[in-house]
Image (cartoon, rainbow, N blue to C red; front, side, top):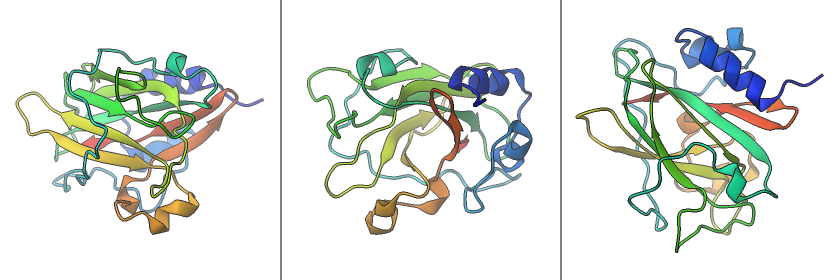
Length: 192
């Protein structure tokens, strides 16, 4: 029996802070190139916002309702400082292509933001973005701890054929992904 995204998210939320390097205990296999937080570590690499960023996204975590035909995925992680301490109330914003590879340019479909909880955790329930010409599969994120500088970056899917051809791709921005009975569960910890 395959575990659901909800069960994986519940397990993630019930656990104490587990850096991605220790995610195997959470039932995920950490990718060898995925940057894990270590005391004094470098921040998560920045990437361009791209032409489809829109300010003032709504406060929401459940984006999948806006793309009911898309494959569901829950994307979750922590916001940490460079000493691996969780940063509560950090702003985490996402925007992405839909199940057809298109971005909503007039509204806020598949766009949202939230604030990390007291333990630095964040998550979005959304859909896997479709490919579109010239890019590999990815999510866009902006992350800002209270009083900090805004990090704009992109997260990528492991094993995508387009990764090697995408000029923005960075292997340290690969999410760790686990299959779930009702989609996928992805994990990435931002260091800001």
